[in-house]
Amino acid sequence: MTGDLFVGVAPAHRPAALAVLAAVVLLVPAVAMVDGYARLGVPWACRLRAGVAAADTAERWAAALLLAAGIVHLALPLGHHGGGVLTAGFLTSGAVYCWLAHRVTTGRRWRGPVTVLVPATLVAYLVVVARGEEVDQVGLATALIEVTTLGLALSRRRRVLAGAALVVVTTVFGIASWLLALAGHDDHRVAGEAHPGHHHHDGGRLARAQAGVIMRPGEDGTTEAQRRAAAELAAAVRAATGKYRDLAAAVADGYRLDGGERDGFDLHYAHKGRRSDAAVLDPARPEMLVYARQGGRAALLGVVFQMPRAGERGPQVGGATTTWHAHNVCVGLLPPGFGPVTPYGGCPFLTVQVTVAEMMHVWVVDSPAGPFADRLPAEYAKQVLARDGRPA
Image 1 (cartoon, rainbow, N blue to C red):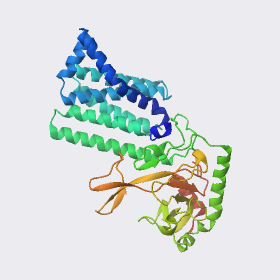
Image 2: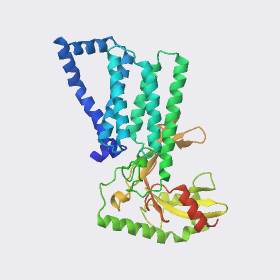
Image 3: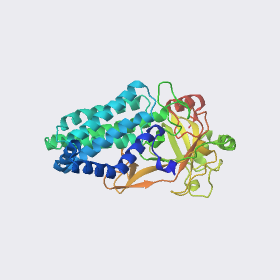
Image 4: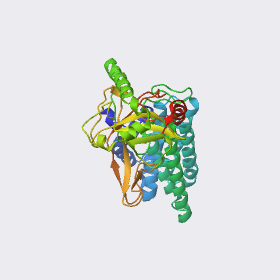
């Protein structure tokens, strides 16, 4: 149950998620307590109740969102161990958010400070992400809360300019966080190791937040038997796919390029017949082959195993080492017919979201992130192509 509850949440951010849930649970008794003290004539409770009663709907929402953002920031140091500067930043921003929530409920000015604090917080978040922080659902959800609060703060200014500013902030932040999450897949670390000076969470870090990627909660650990099974699977795949080092052999066996780009360092060749057969995790019958191809040469990088139908779970023969994942794609009637989800995980207008069957990579080259990593660094793929590429 814990794994399902926290899927998409980095371990370091779980205390913040729990803090928000606790705040929601405690909201009703907190309101009752304030009302009781106000009835007794306690000054602070009377001011708070009167301020909330006098606030309009937008101001009440702003106060609630500011308080939620403040709780998240104040709780982040419980899971983070990023040093004194980062902790001080979390505590300071959390205190300011809570202070602004109080100002809203007491009828004081709050819109101006919010228009400064929110962009500064978003920029700081992107800087931390660029330095190794994990983008996950807590981070993105908090950012959306802050952006919504910014919209409420701008709502009484010039409508056109305010709307344009909000669209720009939302778009820029969404795309930037998305690109940083994608760029993190090229991190050369082995799952389970941390780079000096970077945050480390766990081996599945980046798959949690990449828009459109669903990382199924894996097992908590890996036994010795599972480690052996994973190593045996990787060795069997290398042996069974040796003939496909020549791209022509793969094409002769029925594999076809899945996509429009003929050159690249992550080209997938799919076999339609093997996608629909009953074989599951058969080293000799992978559903897809992955190649690097450029300048008339190609090199086999690995394979992709895919379940026959969406919703079926792939066998984790290697425990937490062999984690399967799925992708959400957007499908519509207009060209090109399908595409990736937006940076915030949704689909554009006039398209619907579809989840494809679970899949798992097995690399036949010495991947710096391990044989079952969900992505091979592009620079490493270039090195493999230069060393092992064959005429294509």
